[in-house]
Amino acid sequence: MMKRWSVLFALLMFSQISWAQYIEEMGSLENVYEARARSVLNTILRPTDYTLVVAIELDHDEKKLKEFHDEMDVQYLPGMPLMGDAPALGKATNKLHEMKSKTDISVVLSRNVTPETERIIKDLLTSKLHLDATAGDNVTVKRIELPADAPKAEPKPDTLPELTWKMWALIVIMSLLALSGLMFWAWRRGRAQDPRKELKENHEYKHTEKDQEKEPEVAAGATPAPASEPVPAEPEFNMDAVKQHVLAIAAQYPQMTSRAVTEYTLNESADKAAVLMEFLGWDVSKRVFTDVPAMAWARLGKAVKERTAPTTKVETETSIRDVYKAILAAYVEHEMSTDESNPFSFVLKMREDERQQILDKESPANIAVLCLHSPPEVTAGIVATLDAEKRVRVLAEISRVEKLPHNVVQNVIGSFNQKLTELRMRPEPKVEGATVLAKVIRGMSPEEEMDLLALFANDNPEELERLRQVILTFDDLKLVPSDILSEVLGAYEVDALYAALFKTHSAFYNRVLSTIPERKAMIVERDLSDMVQIPSRKKTAEVRRDICQQIEKVMYSRSLRIGDLVNGNVRVVKSV
Image (cartoon, rainbow, N blue to C red; front, side):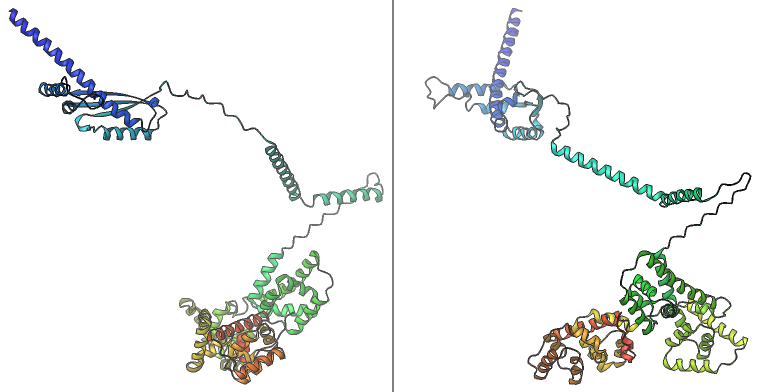
């Protein structure tokens, strides 16, 4: 029995000695890892910003522990020389690393360390110490307020910034601006409520005083005379509405409006008509009142020239009102003449383009019946839009008509109604091919335009004739009036005129050069006869196009059409 107790006691003592050995070796290995970890952390942190704890667990392998002790004993045998300082642990440490089963590193950081630094610390410790998360190794980072940390600053109450003299000056200026804006708004509001209130009060006050002074005393029992009723104020004259209405009437009935303005100018007052023209704008008036004769334009120009003082607002409103009444009277008279009692009122009230499409398909006899039921200015417009052959036949039919039986008129009305129904069921939009072609040509380069016009002149003269009705070609300069040529060509230099007239016929360039100053014409004529140089085709084409476009602008400002110029119907009307 005693023997058993002795064996048990010996085993217990041996186990206690062996466990102490493990604790001692774990501490040695922890010192090695802690030294390595601190060498890493000191590169990015201050020593006062962290603290470090390393805990390592070893496998209880008696064989490896004995091998470690044997190697340690061999390294430190008595009499063995050592190079330098004795290491804390020698080569036998590899045995301890083999016995390591788990490593737990706890890093306690200051609260001042940023989260980015915390992530970097974990990555560096894992790579430097060769930790393996699958084997149970772990790096734990915790936060704590270390004694070396600076105390937190207590938040101060928010205070307004101190006001400087600049800020006070700005406050005063803004206050004055706000006060002046408020006073201005109140003043405008007071005037907008009743603009005639003050005048009315003053008038009543003066009238009361005069009545008290002049009226005799009323006898007792006498009935006072009834007070006169107040005169209603005249409605305000809307100038913009009048302008829009005049332009609308002129656009719908240009001949009638032009006749009304002409009659008022010649018979009533040219001064007031000139005020209306200035109100509408002279350029707009030339385009709107197309049938005003030259005599009336001369009267208007004379009225403007003899005017000595600018017209006041009251005079302007009065003049415009009087002329507007004359135009409105002519418009009402025209509408009354084309009311429902006229069997062809539905044709006369159609748009001009729709009416033209119907008339293109009607016989001359039916058109003649329509003209007999139309006002003179409408008849003139209808006849002017017909081609030459059809116009002669219509005029002949009108001259032969003596009686119009009712059935004939009804047949013509039925024909027009049928054409109108067909037009509305199958509309035929009117497309001006020559106008579209002119826009295409003007969109090309000047050289391409010059080549295309030459091609039309050689291969397709009919197309060129239609095109000449829309745009001015360089060959038609011989048809342009001399005053327009002189106005346009006088602005060009000698080299530009030489390039434009290069290789043209002598009769042509002599006609053109006769409109410019004599000295400049002699220089250009001499250069053309000698052909001192050959200009580039690009410059020739560019100058020719520019001359044509400038002449078109001048003709447009004088209400002249290109088609009238080509047809020989140009009437030079100088601007007022």
